[in-house]
Amino acid sequence: MNKSAWKWMMAACLLLGSAVPTAFAEETKQEAASEKKEAAGMVQLRQAASAIGAYVKWEQSTKEATVTYGDRVWIIRSESVESTISGQPLKLTAAPRVEQGTLVVPWNDLCEALQIQAKWVNGKVEAEMSDWKTRASQFVMQFAAAADRPEAAEQIQSSLTPALKKAGQVYPIGMFAKQITTMLGQPTQLIQATQIENDVHRNVTVSFKTGKGSVLSVVLRYTKNGLVDDMYFNFTLQGQYQAPSYDDKDAYKEESIVIGEGEFKLPGTLTVPASGDGNYPVLVLVHGSGANDRDESIGSSKMFRDLSVGLAKQGIATIRYEKRTREYSYQSSAVPRFTVKEETIDDALHAVAWASQDKRLNKQQIFVLGHSQGGMLVPRILAQDTAKAVRGAVIAAGPSGPLEDLMLTQFEGQLARAKEAKLPEQAIAQLEAQVAAWKQSLQIIKNKEYTVDNYPANLPIGTPSWWFDFRDYYGGDIAKNQQVPMFLIQGDNDVQVGKEHLDGWKKALSARTNVAYKLYPKLNHVFVPYDKPSTGEEYMLPGNVPLDVITDMAKWIKSQS
Image 1: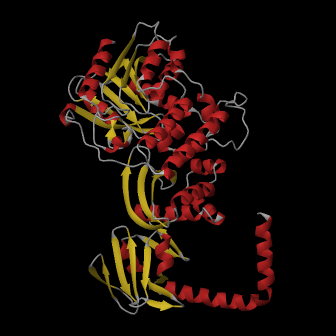
Image 2: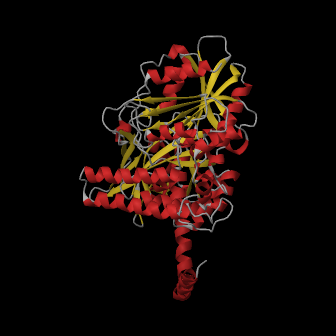
Image 3: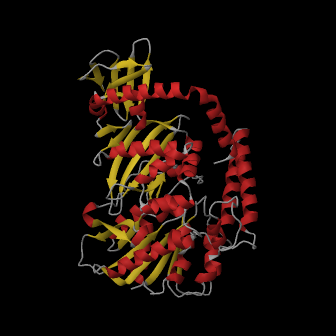
């Protein structure tokens, strides 16, 4: 405990010393009254509701309280057994009343009104195991409280798996909560909660309004025994995906699979052609940068899903899976010396290994496709493939030079476009600051005194080991000495990875004879056509990978048999 905290506590003790007997007596009376109310089934409305993220609004003039919890709106009045829930009447077992300035209500009525299955024990909500909505919303409220209250961070430990507790020793949960709530604000009202299960986790997505007027959205990943194994906070905008015209549901079958084993196993999807007797070629899809899902969802596009349904119609199976940094966001952030090996390469090869053992797939015809950063890493994936299981590889919009340099190019491009569009000075100033900040980061990243295993603590860059492992990386320098056939594809309207990167690969691999290249007009970074110069904003527009890209890919894969 810091010195200022000790001084505060001592001052409080000195101030209250003479009043301790009186205060203790009063506290005992209040506790007795509280116990009596609880025994009678009455609880303090605001205390109980706020514990699960329900918002309470009190109208003094009418003595009415409105409680909002997701889509449930409960209106009650002091001294009346009449209430309404989302417009429908609900008669209470006892009339709410104001005691010591606080409205108390029957606990059972609160549970019925808000549709929660829980008990009220010693001033706390204890949700039933089956009530995933209440458990999740309560967890988020407890997590947010940990931002300012160390005791809250301790209390939440009983809800965590051993793996998440271990991660918290490296990256304290209170620190994480502080970062989230500083950015978005404290959660004040549950908006909605949804649940979906995969073969690894039960995933509950909860969204809250916050005190800053933002929306806090988090996916809580539960194990089968009901403990929280990880948390994924989504900060990206989600668009409206539309299935492509070539999505023929009769042409393919999909099933859930698990990639890898142990602490970081990942949920995935195998897509196979509906026709044929098996022995299908298979393409493993490897994500780009960021905590991506198995579909490579970016805005309104789902590049990997498009490829999967399109290739199935051409007789080719695919494997796609959640990226480790999405399924295990918190745990990944606490891994010492975290690099692209842990982020991407290991799991790509776990997927290759899975393909090798499935009898429906041709283990002599296993291919890997890497998109964007995943494309950059294809040479390292092949280098780590000691089993030589990969027959060929596709690099889609893969940068040919260092990622840190590309990021500076991207930031400078954003600034130039902002100036050209004559955006407000404040917006331009923010982009100028972004460029300046990244240039400072580059001085650290490029410093050869720092290595993956040797760098000072508290460097002002995120995950230093990741950058020191990946800096000054040219995939072509590795690939030029490899023999695995490759197909490099690129859109000529890519604002993130310009078409000059395809030329970079061509130059690096000029001595190789088993590499093919294709540049597609109008396609942006997510391989969706766009008539105007790409800025990235168009990612929110619905669009799909064109059929000719899929056809070219299928022809190339089949040509390697």
